[in-house]
Length: 336
Image (tube, rainbow, N blue to C red; front, side, top):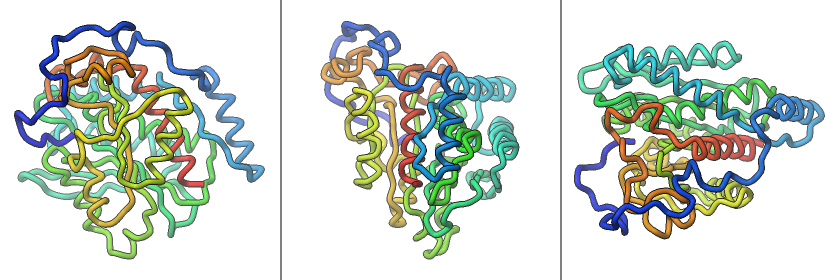
């Protein structure tokens, strides 16, 4: 997520002494209500494929958290091998893009790399289209793939990038044939001011922008002291996410910390309906939020935001799992 400015105001509870709420950290809180387990993925995938073939509405498959974490591990390895980051214009970003593109190409997506310039360096967006569906009704899901220079960017935003990648691969595994056309995107240079996503939106004519029925953005969805925040921009998209979380017994709040600071903003400014999920950055968790979600009162949602400690150790598996499944649910529901 793009840094707005230093020293911005924190939410209520910033001055509270950090205390561990009963139930401990979010990772140690009560488990998520039942949903298809990761070990049942093969069964869920087969059911989805059968439902698609018979013309019935298939439910989204469970997204295996182990697969999402494997992508994060790979992104960490890339950063480690390339100066500790995956920032715009640097070797770590190029290697990250190559990794994601290879996975999508092997799964049958049509991919293209869009080039742009920012801060004297060449940047790249990766766009992946799933064949089929009404090209006049496009559902997009995207995340920024770049990190800041100061760290590997595993929560910000390897988490969103990996979950979107695994959702796209689940589309391929299930043989999903939606009514609408599905498109996935990984943006470059978000950390420099939403440069990649803005370039993409500006590259579209008004007719092409009008074909996008919704853009879903996922930026930081595995914060170690997580909240469950839903964008409130488009009512239909917002309801889709809220209904999903209500169905698994999780209360959500409207996302305000990152409003206008991530890649949904260029789409929204161009009149495209947008929505998304967020688990929090450097705002601090209030006592009321900790009572709902667990975690530590008075501490940031992500204490390693834009820091060198934003590594694979900086991820809450429960939040990453829940949000990944919510992404798949929304992609399936909104593309029917």
